[in-house]
Image (tube, rainbow, N blue to C red; front, side):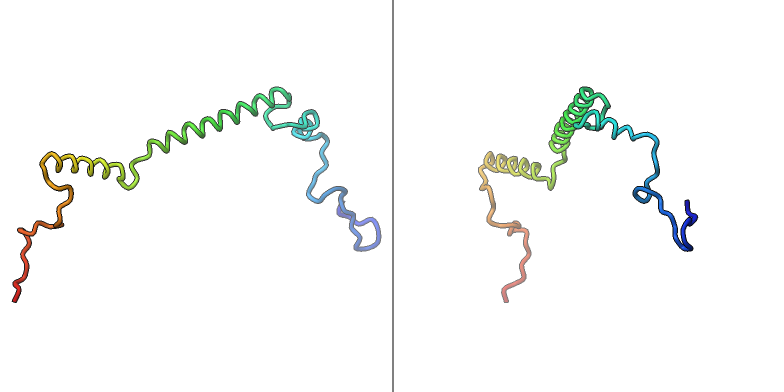
Length: 119
């Protein structure tokens, strides 16, 4: 194959695209596609192929939607937003039952602060 037959330096090249080997038989996928132009890759029988394709997509999408939504629903409380809301409602209820204002005007208790003298 690599020997030259013609003048010196002439090389015979193989027929067909480079890297392609000569096959005696066609590939099974090419045979299935010739029998069934709507071949999805599940089976050589067209009816079984369509049924398997539909079942695979239905189950795959159903599982993704159901498990994905369940996963998102049961994620932990990001940033403790739900906890802080419940805690604020509990404190409001507690202050209203004691008759105190909801928000005090002072961040710290002024009786406990030690201030420098006003010289």
